Length: 219
Image (cartoon, rainbow, N blue to C red; front, top):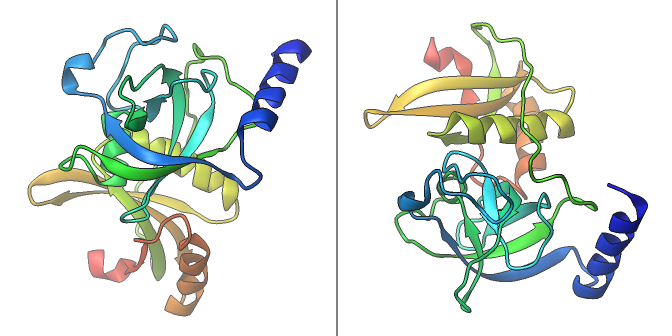
């Protein structure tokens, strides 16, 4: 991004954001399945398994923290479309994001929006992940942050948590819940429950549903 565009974006934030970090609150909806593969306003094609959103005015590429005000679940998304075109709603989320916030069955949710970035990211940027993967038999205790059906959504959240807690091991556990394949994201391998509780308390603001798991019970 050149300096002129950066200056415009910073000016936008200064004019339209309130003094505190929270940008907006209101109703969120999510894309119907019929939009799968359709081109968004940014030129990308909508993918329900990606953590993206439509917003009326924020620059494409802006990353947002969305909090469900009813259950306090959190997801991070990237703006790549315009909408929603209904005056009573403030944001339209991908299906994966709606699943993370647990309001798919309700259709709508009361949410808050916080801007995570101070610059727009190119909308056409493709996402790649590099990692070393191997089976493990962890011992002790960890903190399960969430479980989702979409692997990509879990990878994005895992990346964010790995950056924030760079000394904590991130473990992915595939499992079945009510005959449905889900992927659990677990942070940390601790010798004692007390050590795991310290991390759980740190996560409580953003991931209020996190809980301690004892790895020996899975073996």
